[in-house]
Length: 308
Image (tube, rainbow, N blue to C red; front, side):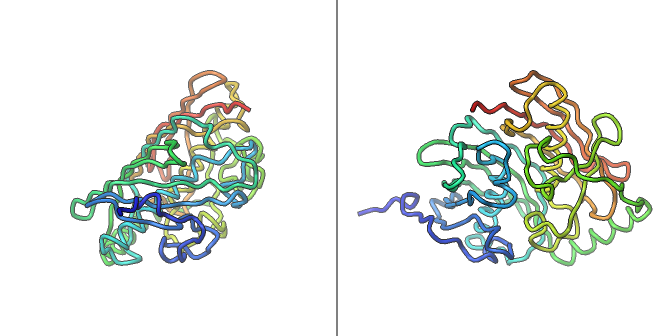
């Protein structure tokens, strides 16, 4: 009798934090995993309904953006557990594309976790990896996501970062003395989860980087992690979209195409520039993150109003 490896996946116990390059068990989403084929894998994930970041929503919905972290953890499991990449190997995300076909599966009751299976195909070319797949809840596709990641030799990574930091040293200006925008204006309840300040110029928002944040900086980084950059883009888009009539407390990120260039330094001021188009039910935003006169990340987001 053949057992379906996906059906056999369990959701009752999280893997150890080091399995997904985390420190706190609170930040672990993966519960189980299996190999389906030569380059295909299934990873069970569970996101707690009281997670301090990803469940900090004004509206009663699970946050689709939490799945970017779920996919990242799935890739870490695959590369370390199945592809023999040494743990702790430096890496950088280069591109992310995601699409949410419908939001009903993300309805939340405040007590039930968001859980499902990440099914991915991982292909490798030298030190570059392409990851593509779907997050499925039961039999319902909830998100498709693909991203590319580059892995570095430790010594080479150190050389790159030293060179980049030396080139950016002249840009070390005092960070803006900005307070977070109102949490409700970006769909949050907790001010600690707000990562932008009020606009310094029309539709340009300074990034606020708190290295003590328990989710964004659960492990040591020598740069701003992609998760914080994406959140800054989303919050910037929400603020600008609100001026065009979108109810930001009831809007979800449902589509994204993002590109990441050089590493974004923690100690150099950065801003997110945004322009939006659309109407009250759906907005498209074009964004870029600038640091020291260089565009270090860019892309487009789509925000969709949630029906109560």
